[in-house]
Amino acid sequence: IATKDKKMVQGVVIEAGKIIDRSPATGEVVAEVAASSADDVIAAVAAARAAQPQWASTPLADRIAALKSAVKAFGQENGVEALAALMQREMGKIRSEAVEEVEGAVDKDEFLDLIEEANRPLRLGHNATVVRDPHGVVGVNAPWNFPMDEILLLALPALAAGNAVVVKPSEVAPLCGAKVVEALAKSLPVPGVAQLVQGDGAVGAQLVDLVDMVALTGSSAVGKKVMEKASASLKPLVLELGGKDPMVVLESADLDVAAKDAVTYSVMNCGQVCCAVERVYVPSALLATFEAKVVDVASKHQDLAPLVSKMQQKIVAEHVASAIDAGARCLVGGPEAAATLDSEKPAGSSFYPLTVLTDVPHDAKITRDETFGPVVAITPYSPADDVVALANDTAYGLSACVYGARDEAAVVASRIRAGQVGVNAWPLAVAPPQCPWVGHKASGFGYHSGADGWRQFSVPKSIVINDDSSA
Image 1 (cartoon, rainbow, N blue to C red):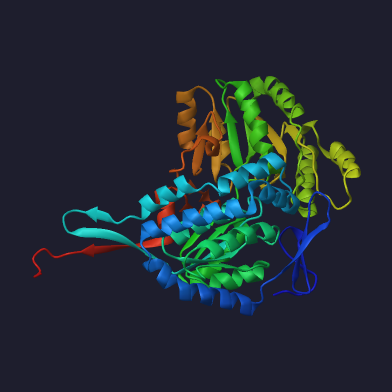
Image 2 (image 1 turned 90 degrees about the vertical axis):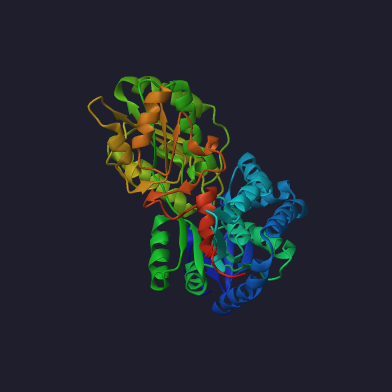
């Protein structure tokens, strides 16, 4: 598994059994992290499997209480500021976004209360009760873009349901992932119920073979490989995958709000969010006004973080250049600004400037493929165009948003094929925690969050009593 100079996600290198963990802001080595061998993975799954029955026999309320304590200990023992600083060094977030993620990660009481409610036995009729059985050992393959909180979003409902977990953090952010899993392992009352493995896709593939359920947040390409591998044993899956999420601006929209959100949710986390706004459809008659408002918002956006890697920087640059070649106009940022920024930053860094493109053709690469960068891509549409058809013309279906008069926008939202659609808002910003997180089409299989999502980490079992049977 750990061979010299083996290339992994985002160009990360493994040498002599060590993940070479680099800062995207400087290119400097942050740490060398031991990669798990095949025997290490086998041992981790075996330990989790040995611990799982005792954990599953622990009453649900006690499991929830233990998980709350473990999450609090994770924050208290490490400190929010120190965890945020580690996240900045390892994957490049700006400080405010790193702090926001960590603060969310260490405050899961409401989240766990809702998970507990979803897992309680359900009485049906006068003689049946539906209880929930854990799958056994859940393999959690975590992403790099939210390297702490995403682990908890998958591991906590798995553990709450009575499963043990084996977590493989992204090789891009191994230290962030280790902090989370080690805190759970240390604090939970059943030793061995939370295990950590580190490494590349080979480690993740081996994990898929050995566990009873797989939970993954990652790219659609990786999701397809996991599904294919899991199909041999009909293994249950929760896959939250990529997106190419549209914003639809109607003629009745408040353009100030729409322009602000177009910039904010295209470039948050440097655009490296599965549900980022990646396509903005604007009526041709309002294009010039909307462009001016977007440029104004973009000009006030001062915080700039690096992209996660030189590889991601290259992808974003190629998408922008190909859009311009296809006829798009660059209003902010773009290739020249990128070249200037690159000359000003350390040689190993991976910055890319906030970029605003307009007149982007609907068939451009940047409209079709996931960009994952700080780019606002505006495409005008005419009254003759069916903007819903444009929004739905994608392999993905993670999220979307529609801006306009509320009732009109709600009708348009109902026609968009996506798991969550915001009306006059980016959906994740205003959605209650009870909402499931669903990917339509190539954006996912199964889903997490919400009662329906949390219940996917267990199997329902109906216990039906014959009233006529003897005592």
